[in-house]
Length: 481
Image (tube, rainbow, N blue to C red):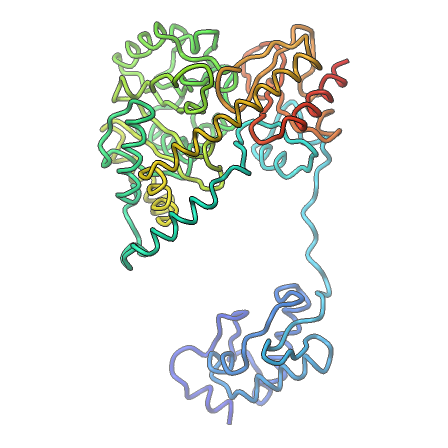
């Protein structure tokens, strides 16, 4: 009778649950077949210990079989110890998998930091446990404004129309683009129409989109500062672009050394050396752009300045700049929200690239962030974390003067990290690997160099307490000695 009901039913005769399909069952053996399928799913871990099986009525309706077939299969699992009946809590898996999944291989600390880092090096180093993480690029994540975010999220959800849950503009939610345009005007001196803004999944995605579009326009290489972010170079190289180095000195990028059709730079707070692109260099850069050069500006750490007001963005003086920024260093990298401004000759292609990458960022996070920007909560957060980060910067400077007095400190005026260099011959890769083996994560400066230069370390301080910073730096001093 159950088989007849199945064959005569119209539409689906399967279930989303474990992708069960009763057409695979032998004639007259539905309960045996279903029990076998469930045992196999428990054995290979698809049904974990503590997992609850669907209500018998629900699964029977999905499979178009009688409820008795499902209850009989469940009873067989209970009888042989694979499951247990828990009354109103339903039927719960109690047997462990026969062959548990093999854990992912864990690399030894000494194998993570090597002279030639691979494409997955940052994933690997993040996954490597350590007592004290002094790697750069992360703000104080404990300071994330949870209460303000929840208030904004509740307010957004109360006002949200059903249509907002559908597919949106790949450029981003209109409210977010408007909030970003006002934020950039207030904080970075940039006047831009909201329609010219593309909301992206952080600066990393912006660089990938720009790299793809530049390739489409016939550009085969984009110059980068030296030293510069290894991660940024990896994104551009993944797009098929060469990344020839241009030296950086105390005034920033040596514009006179530019020979490429395009350049990526961090003028407000150069990564990793922390210098600001000087006024004369900015004028040289604008002259270079007037002759057809393409400028890609990563506004890295611009808002975290401790000695004076942040310097204006190059984009504020030159609308032809491809400009990108994000909230990763202000709120949290996990949000994956940033923005990209581009000149008219690239804009349509960048929107197309974003469309085909992901159809646009998640809308709810955009609307919540837009509300924080418009209500002043984001400026409030910036003031709070800037004071906290400054105290931790001071703690690291003190610790370095005590434990590593021979090191030269760079970039103390702004940002979330310091770079130190050594006069003596020091193998910074070996030093960073030894520190990691002792439970302290740092990055060797040589990772970020393509040209010869002094060895050193890049040290993040924003995410650590003063005592952790002192302990980590003291370890570096012992290793150096």
